[in-house]
Image (cartoon, rainbow, N blue to C red; front, side):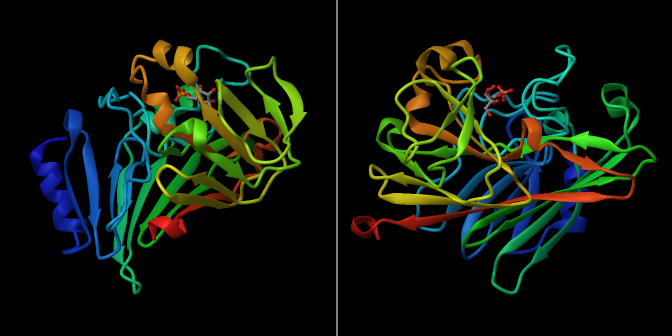
Length: 307
Ligand code: TA6
């Protein structure tokens, strides 16, 4: 983004001791939040949160060392905004996986220093002729990010047109873990899931989710929070959600990671995705004028020996 555009963003939206704007990797504009609670970064392309690190703690969001920062390319890691569909397009394989908004430039709509010392950044995206060529509906999206003791991300989708549409989506969060084979994800015990690495069979989760191979599961009809217990890093990452009826757990494991050009060969051992979503049958129908909010909060609890 040209320097004068960055300067204009700072003139309009920078807040001392809270948020500023600069050209980041690949020249993509980023908002950097630094306050008394935490560090956060948000790429304006895709309204993509790329970092969250509470003060004095380890990074919470994972980004690949091989991530590509270029116009139109989704960043591998952080919290990609998947909308208006999750996964492959329901009928047209020529359309991008996870919708198109995560690779488009969003605009800054506002910033604020909150009373609790957190920082809020609002980003927006509306339909245009390019998006209507991909998906023929009028919409407005607003992503509100609050960086403080916790990370809160809310995606508000509104139908601004005259036709009803169905939209799926996800806040596709990538988390740093010490060793993916040692974590346990609580909160999904007893939930049915679609196992995408076993022919899409429907199964029932028994106990905590552990990872020892490629894992790609869509837990449907669940509104519960999840917690990633990480004994190696001595913490639990607690993922709560609103407006979401699906939770997705993903780790590509060795072979799939190696097939992804923007994923380092052995990085799979240091990450796991726990995504708040409305996928498959949980997609949302919006009539003209209607709106829906998908929201997640990420909190870190240090385990006793690490507190
Ligand atoms: O959320 C899991 C998943 O749907 C996996 O199937 C895998 O494709 C992952 O998303 C990453 O998708 P991306 O299009 O970002 O490479």
